[in-house]
Figure 1 (cartoon, rainbow over the protein chains, first blue to last red):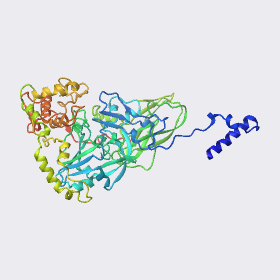
Figure 2 (cartoon, each protein chain N blue to C red; figure 1 turned 180 degrees about the vertical axis):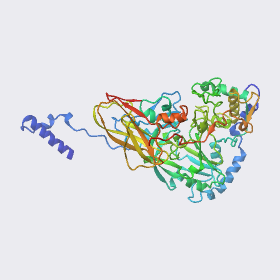
Figure 3 (cartoon, rainbow over the protein chains, first blue to last red; figure 1 turned 135 degrees about the horizontal axis):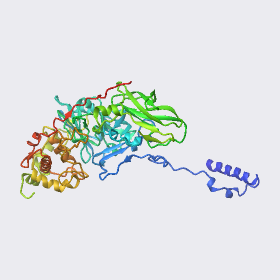
Figure 4 (cartoon, rainbow over the protein chains, first blue to last red; figure 1 turned 90 degrees about the horizontal axis):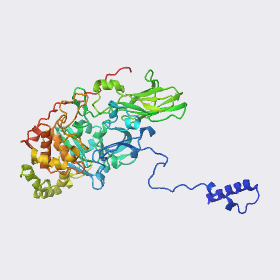
Length: 401
Length: 197
C-alpha cells in the first residue's frame, strides 16, 4: 500500500512538471510504465550469484573429463575464502553420487575394535572447524618448463575453505591402534577408490574428517559426504569420498604416491612422500591477461600461504626485483591458510615487472624460479613454488614473464 | 584364452563365488556382538559387516599383504589386455588416451624422462592394486583377480621384467624386482638454498 501511495505521489509530481501544475485528474493514465521501478525477484531457497559475475573454473579439453583438474579463478577472488562452487577440482574417476544415509566409513586393520560408522554417527562426535589452504601437489606444475599466461592456469589449483569435521585422533582412540602400527591407508568411495598412505603421526595429530565446507555440507566435487583433511599437505592426500581407513605397519606404495605425486630429480631419483606444501605467493591483481584501464592509483593484491604455518611477511617488487617492500597482510593471519596481501600502487605508464615473495613463520623464503630449478631441475612436476613474475606493459597490458 | 589356463579356470570360479556359507556364519557371529562393540567412549558405530569388508576390496601392500587367491600367465594377460586395455593404452602398451606402459628404462636422469611401469614404478604390487581398483578406466574393478594377475604378468613381460613362462600369483608377484626399486628417496625439503633475506 505504501509503495502504491509513494508511486502515485511521484506520478502526480511528474505530471505537475509536464502540465505546469494543472490537471491532476487522468494523470495516472499518462504516467510512463517505463519510469516505474521494477519489483525485484522474490525470496529464494538457495542463492545464486549475480548474472553479471562470470568467473568460472578453467578446464582443459579432455577425452576423459572424469579425470583431470579444474582451476580456481584466482584473478577474480576477494579475501581468503574460495566459494565452494569455484574450489579447484582434481578427480581421478569422476564425482560419485553418494547418499549420505547409505555411506559408511570403515576403520580397520591394526586396531583393537574395527568400526563401521554412519554419517549420523560421525556428526554426533565433538567437532572442530579450521580455515585452511588446499593446494594440489601439481599446482603450478607447468611453471617448471612453460610459465602460464594467467594466474588461473599458473596457480589455480589452490583454494581456501573453512572445513568442519571430527579429529581423526578421536576416532583412532575409539578403535584402539595396535602397537607396531605406523601408517593409515585412506581410500575413497569413488569409482577408482583413490588411495593414499598417511603416516600415523600426522593422523594422530592434525588430520580430521570433514563433512562441512564453508558453512554447508561439502560439495560432491570436494568429497561429499566425508573428506580426509591433512592440513598443509598436498590436496591428493586429502582423500575425498572417504570410505576406508586401514591402520597398517607399512606404506602401501599406491599408484598415486609412487608413479604420481613423487618428484623426479635431475639424478633420476624421485622423492617420495613429499607431502608438505612449501610457502608460496602470487599477485592476483594485476596479473596475466588483465588490462589496466589507465594511469593512476591501484591496489596491488595477491595471496600467500604455507603448509608449514603462518605467513610472516610478503615482499613485493614493482621494479623487476631491484627493490622489495613489505605488503600489508590481512589479519588474522591463520596458519596454513590463504593470506591476502595488498599494496597501494600507482601505474604511471612505465613498463614494470612485478612479483611477490612469501616468508613463513619458519623463516623459509619463497625461492626464485631459477633457484628452485637449480636444485630440482625441470622434471619433478610437483611442488613448484617459485616466485611468479608479471610484466605490466606501458599500455597497461599484463603478461607472463 | 584358447587353452584352459590356470587363469581361465579361476575366472570361471569368480571373485563373488568364494565366500558362500562362511559369510553367513560370520555375519551371525558379528550380529551377536554388535551391541557390545560400539566405540568405547562415544558409543558410536558397530563392527563392519562381512559385506562391508568385502565391498572395500583389497588394498595391496608392497609385501603382498592383501593379494587374493588366483593366478595369471603372460599368455592369458595378452588376451585380457587386447580386450580390456588396448583401446586406450595401445595394442602393446605404447600409450594413447591411456598412459604409456612400456619403455623408458634409462631415461629418468635425462632431459626427457619417460615414466612408465617398467622404468619408474618401484613395486609390482602397485600395478596389481591399481589395475584392480582403477582399471579399465570406464569400468573400474571389472576384472577378476586372475585376470588382474594375468594382465599384470603381460605388462611386466612387455617391459622385459619377467619371462613369458612366469605365472603371477600372491606368492610370486611381491618377489618381482622392479628396475627402479631403489629409485626413490626421502623428502629432503627444505632443499633450496636461502639467500638475500
